Length: 216
Image (cartoon, rainbow, N blue to C red; front, side, top):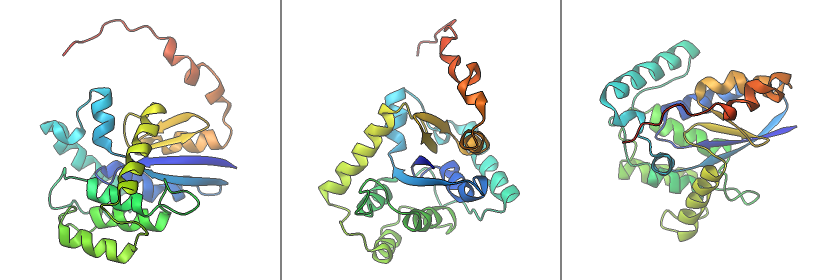
């Protein structure tokens, strides 16, 4: 049985879509999952990227596309009142809800409740009163101000960067990274044992020379 590490940030609508679609996309397969909250902004900073919502035309397209994906897949999605927002309180809450067996990973119920708080309610995702109600519902063993929870989130993010994760959602299996909602079919084929992943299609891309490098 293969094990998947699912890296996510609640700020990402694609992470929400992938989270909701994962059971359907992998239906009939034997696998296990660890859900790892990470700070998307830290990944972007490390790799020198802007987020989709930081580029005005791309922001509009991103929202249109995720709403279309949700519509076409039958996934409930309502944009939060404002986006992007500060996801740190949500991420720290998730980190505080890590399981005793795996402190780095909240369980699926916690992640589902928190993703739907952001992407189904239509309210302010980072509203203090809504966050307090969410924390009361989830009743984490640690508190939002707990240094251990903060440290765990940083550790998760550093681990993701060390595994060459550059965005969310990212699914890691056997050291291979599958990035994005649209990578779910690839992930399924890998878990099915498709031999393509042993060949040049997967392994040869790093041999492609960089022809030109654009400087900022």
